[in-house]
Image 1 (cartoon, rainbow, N blue to C red):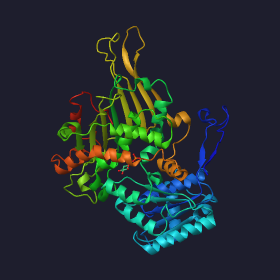
Image 2: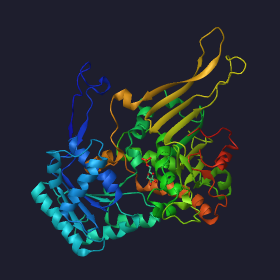
Image 3: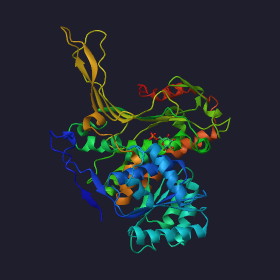
Length: 518
Ligand code: BG6
């Protein structure tokens, strides 16, 4: 059963930020086992295990839980515990693991070495889960987290079913599965997943949805009266969604060279942001009502006409350059990248939503690696004023812009015009800023922490439903196919540390405007 604990957060005037007084701060998950497939990988090390530890530290994970690592690596349980302690020490947001919490946490970790087609290893996994149910009180609830390449999903799912670990054989508790984004054939993958797992048991993770400022998009829109009346084609001129990174492909060249920015970032993270910005108010905040609205808006996207791809999209690949004063190599010189690669490390797309609210409002989406600054944001640019009354010669009256800052800054900023003090009516653009950290006096928990906790509670609101995934794929497929079939002879076409390829400016040729500075 899911419980809710309310911590009072301290009385106003006490030592707690009054903005948080009385808020519910922890929702305990069900007792359960979490199985990480690909447990020796980077994601488990950097994100997932530190997230589990912090969930326990925050009392969100109940005392009766078990964590089983499964991977091809030849560890045994003791080594797994040692490795996981190292990863918590290095990456946990709460600092190194501490006793007595760590020793209790470590007792609940076990490891099964095996390849993903090894029947014997899956039989051992089952035995371990049953032992945990008896010894740790995990109540036959099972969350399988597939932190492996998507090409292995089908095999793992078949082996789970064969080992009697599928949802239909578990009559006592629940069985859920978390999968990361698919890159190759999303439809084929879906067919494999849905053979065994009902849609309600599938949690498709998009870690952007676990970021606090992303969750706040709905609060900003639907918990305030002042924005929504303006949130439409009558008042909004354009929307820009940016997910810019300074990192390159790091050690992931092998994967990235087959994915590219469009699949890696736009199809999932950026499209999810677009859906949250453009959807209609849901009738209630339940997972399915919210996901229904997200699906509707994605299905209203104007299909990308192949003849428009040249003017409505832009792609880039980074060359050598410098980031924060340090020289960095070009993409084609990164490890495991084809030296003649045609893969884009920057992608930009202009989209339209064909419905009453958004007809003809352009949505400009972009994402790239090795750009000047890390910066993810959504900028809503309102139309200009209908008639100018004020301003001296040389004053420009800028359009209002509402910016939802996702990272690294987390907050909301509204740009508006104000009079410069003095005898003349000079007008300048100023901004009103809200920052989550200083406003609420808390550091946001990492997205994976929130998402794993939600999956353990059975709350799918922040996970993507298959129909939305499919819709987003349909939108990007014509672009992908065109890009794959016509190599870009200008690659590499932007320097590391820059604003991206100059060619992306042509997307503004029809509507005017320009990209915001990253
Ligand atoms: C991942 C991509 O999904 O998101 C990476 O595969 C990218 O290539 C990462 O770097 C960005 O996430 P964040 O949270 O750092 O913006």
